[in-house]
Amino acid sequence: QKEVEQNSGPLSVPEGAIASLNCTYSDRVSQSFFWYRQYSGKSPELIMSIYSNGDKEDGRFTAQLNKASQYVSLLIRDSQPSDSATYLCAPSRAGGFKTIFGAGTRLFVKA
Amino acid sequence: DGGITQSPKYLFRKEGQNVTLSCEQNLNHDAMYWYRQDPGQGLRLIYYSQIVNDFQKGDIAEGYSVSREKKESFPLTVTSAQKNPTAFYLCASSKSEMYGYTFGSGTRLTVV
Image 1: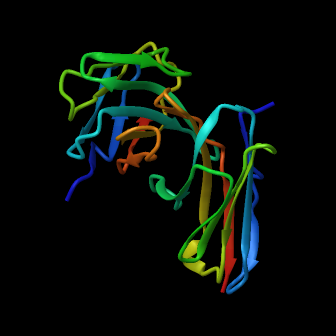
Image 2 (image 1 turned 90 degrees about the vertical axis):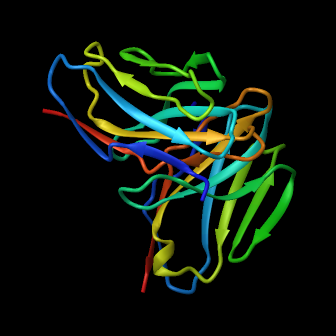
């Protein structure tokens, strides 16, 4: 079992729709959870962080965390073509200064 | 503006040659990291450092070496022992694991 599992995609959604990106992780002691966006040929950029169960909203982005199910998700509302990128899920273990990255989900937003 | 600077953007290595990738940050972050990314794959950790003069091997350290003589700098050397070095190399830093990472713009290394 991989430490972090993401559907590789591509996930294709029409402009204006909600994109739902999912991630499961195996390390039960993970305490911090991050989503990074990576455009083709570029480096990753941190877009969301979540630390406790429930939802966290930031603009068009909502992160959802369920530690009991070891599941974290990212919702993108009103998807735009500029959201087309690969999204990396990254749980982090406290005290370890070390984050595990998933392989990412490719999102394609059709205009 | 604070950030991480990686250089060069593109690097070509001949067989049997050692090359060094530069990474400098002015964010005053304690921790710094080197990752390797191959096409269509996730990030794999090469080395990381939590403080000056100390660093730990990641998952794929063989054929690589690092130093951390200054808080701001964490250079990576790709040695001739690394048999398949063609990849996108990413340097990152973090204040702590609670804050996530800031990445540099990356160095694309190709063996010629």
